[in-house]
Image (cartoon, rainbow, N blue to C red; front, top):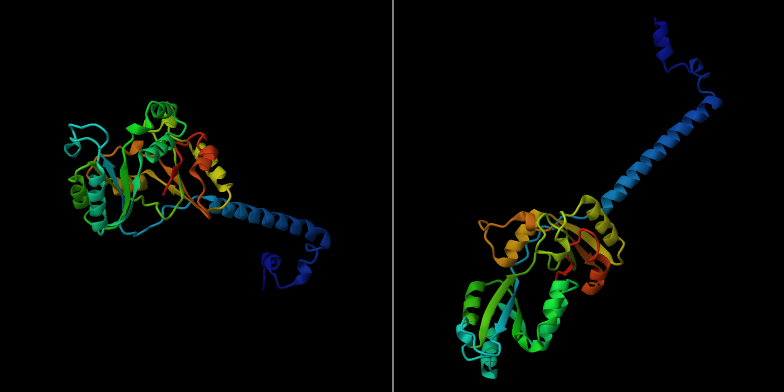
Amino acid sequence: MDSPAMEELSFGDDRRTAGFWTPARRRPLVTVLVVVLLAGLGIAAWGFYEHLRRPLPPPVTSAPRTGRLWVVLCADGPDEYAPNCLHGAATADDKRKIEAVLRSLPEIRDFSFESKERAYERFRKSAGEDPAGLEFVRKTRVDEMPESYHGALGPGEWEAIRLRIGDLSGVFATEIYGDSLWRGVADIGIPLCPEIGSDYPRCRGRERVSEEEKTAVLDRVRDLDGVKAVYFEDAAHALANRRRIFWQSEGEDVDVRALPEAFYVAFDRPPAKAEMEKILGRMPGVADVVSVS
């Protein structure tokens, strides 16, 4: 036989609960349940929205090793510190021989010649809005800029290529850099002020970028037109990328405090660097705005 307590807990007799489930009592309870449900959905929707706005981690890529070649030619006047420049600037015959070697090396996919005028223009743009850089550009003449060749490299024995070209008459220096891990992934990079920011004029005399500044930069990037994806690079990935670009081995000492975290942005159509510089370059915590290509 059921005890009174059991009868009170039983769900089998509607007559015992009919009084509680009157319309007058049902409506407030339903209202509370709806409010709780909507509040829960609101929190979930906001959390999902925030999740979508978070930057992506760097993609895992297995791209073949590619890079860039820079062959700097001898400038006017002899240079006692450069054996190939003892007779002054590279001659037309020197250039023909250099170009013949560049064409003969299968690792060099393509190359182009850069004049003094074009070199000066690139040099001027690289100064950005840094007062010290602009002052240095102002004091530099066009005829002081070196002529050079720029080329794209595929996989191969890069050190052998560097030595082969470096021995040619008229060559002042040969530099080779590996492509960034971000090449082909993003269009614009936004380095943020590191703990030690002396390499970035905008970061001198201040602390590393704050979380609030990161959020402000990310929100501004998200508001730009044509954004396909936003990635975030931490110091560990920045170190791996630096080693790829400069051929640094695992054992070489690099102070990670000087390596900036960064946002990398992919667009539907790559924007002009100058435009991005104008929009993002003056934001607190931003060290620089760079074109990945």
